[in-house]
Image (cartoon, rainbow over all chains, first blue to last red; front, side):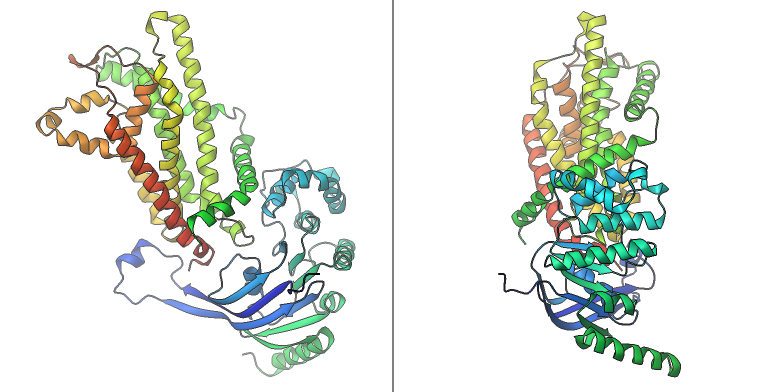
Length: 252
Length: 287
C-alpha cells in the first residue's frame, strides 16, 4: 500500500503578471523608459493540503478565488511561483472537456489524439476504443468531423475518453453540467465506479448539490488562501450562508 | 532540469509527437481535392517560371537549368515553411497547452517534422524527374554518386531548422512582431541564396574578385552553404556555367566551410533548445 498521499500540496504560491496593454511586443521593449502597466497578481498565496488515495475532495470559492489555477497547477500546466505540488499516479485532467479536439478530424481520430495526449499508447487506446464509443453514445457520428458535433456531444466524447484512460487521479472543473440530465446521471455513475476502484478525485464546482453528491471533503478557497476545510456538509452550509449574506449586504 | 532530462521527457511523449505529425499531415490536405500535389505544384510552377526568366531574360545558357534551380529551391522552401509554421506553432497550440501538460517543444517540432516529410516526398519527385530526363535524353544525365551524402546534409539541415524553429516559436509567443521579421528575412534570404544564380557567379563577381574575403563571408551563412551543398551533391556540375556570354568553371564544394556550417547548425540547435526550455513554462502565462 502506498502511504504517500495522492496529492501533496505544500505552501503553494502562484503569481501572474497582468498587462493592460494586451500582449507584449517590441514596442514595450523599445519604450522601456515608459512606465509599464504590468501588475503582479497573487492568485494563490500559500496553500497547504493533502488528498489521500481514494478520497474525493471538492474545492469551492467565489470567482477568482484561485480554484482553476489550483487545478492547472496540479495538472502541471503552470509552474508554482514557490512551494511544491507532488502527485502520485497518472492524472486525467478534465479541465475543459474537448480541449484537445481538432474540428476537422473525425470523432474516432480525435479519440486517438486525445488519448495519446493524456499519456496512453496507441495500442492501449485501440483496446479501449469500443468502451469509449459505447459510453459516449456517439456510435452513429463517430466517423464525422467533430466540428459538426454539438457542445453536448463534445462533452460526452471528452468525458468518455477521460474516464477510460485508467488514471489514478481525476481533476474535474465544472464539467458535468454540460450533458443532458440522463448523461449527467451516467457520469455520476461512472465517477462512483471510479471511486470504488480506489480513484482519487479533485473537483471544482459551483453546483453545491453535485458536491454533496460526490465529495467527502471540502476545501474553501478565499482570496488565494484556504479559508476553511472539513466535511462537505458543514463547509457547504457555511459557504452558502456567507455567499447569501454577502449578496444581500454588499459585494466586495 | 538539464537538457538531457528534457530530452528524456520528450522521448516519453514520442507517441504524442508522432500523432501530432500525423494529424498535421492529415489536416493540411484533408479538405482539398489535389491533396499532397498542392505542395508540389507550388515549387514546380515557381521553378518553371524562374527557368523561363533566367534562360531568356537573364540569358543563362547553362544546360539543365531547371534541375539546378529545383535542387536549390526545394531546400529553401523546406526552410521557409518550417520557420513560418514553427513561428506560429506555440500560439496556435496555446489552447491545448493551457489545459494539458506535455513537453511544449512538441508544438514546433511537429511543424518541423511534418515539413521535413513533405521535403522528403518532394525530393522523391525530384529524383523521378531526373529519371524522366534521363530516359528522354540519356546524354544529359545529371545523376551522380555523391547523392549518397544526402542523408548527412539532411541531418545538418534538420539541426539548423529545428534550432531556428525553436527560437522563433519561443520568441514569437511573447513578441508577435517576430513573425513579421521572420517573413521579411525569409523573403530577403531568397535573393541572397544561390538559388537563381550559381555560386560560381558569386565567386567571379567583380566585387568578390577584388575582395576575396567577401566570398567566405557569403559562405558563413549556413543556409547559403547548405543550398550550395544540395546542388553540388544532387547534380553533377555542368561542364561550364554560361551567363551572358561569360563562362565560369565549376568550383568544388568548400569542405572547410561545410564543417563550419555543420558546427554552426548544431550550435544553433543546442542554443535554440536551451532558450526554448528556459521560456516554455511561461508560454501559458504570457501577460
